[in-house]
Amino acid sequence: MARPLDSGAKKYRHKGRSLTIREWAEELDIPRQTIITRLRRGCTTAQALAPRSAPRTLTVGGQTMTVSEWAEANDVPVNTIKWRLLKGDRPSEAVDPDYERRS
Image 1 (cartoon, rainbow, N blue to C red):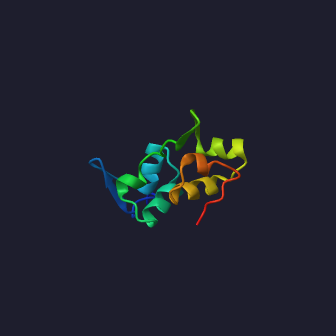
Image 2 (cartoon, rainbow, N blue to C red):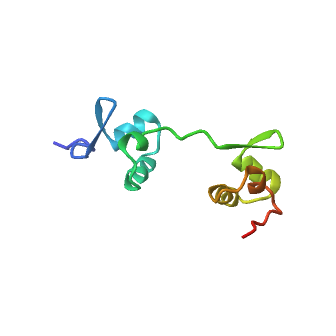
Image 3 (tube, rainbow, N blue to C red):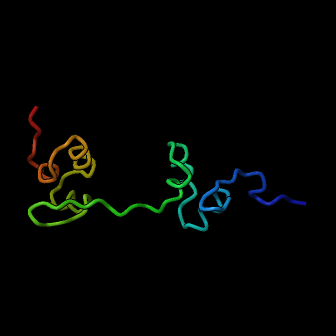
């Protein structure tokens, strides 16, 4: 008799239930690999099973857009904007294509 696919798979407890990664992925509509990657990076089970967060928004000059929208509008790479913000630059500096940080 064939064994079920997940019969020996590790179960992860969350909100009172224990399911395998495959079962959680199906139930929560999160890619299985996303859950695996989050767990490997040290996330808790709750963090690994959380839905993707809403995109970050920035308000500059009274206009609010996501980082991706600012990147496209100003021809600045998304990672550049994120890096500038991480380093403490103001949002207006982070989205400025001509901005060069002074040392």
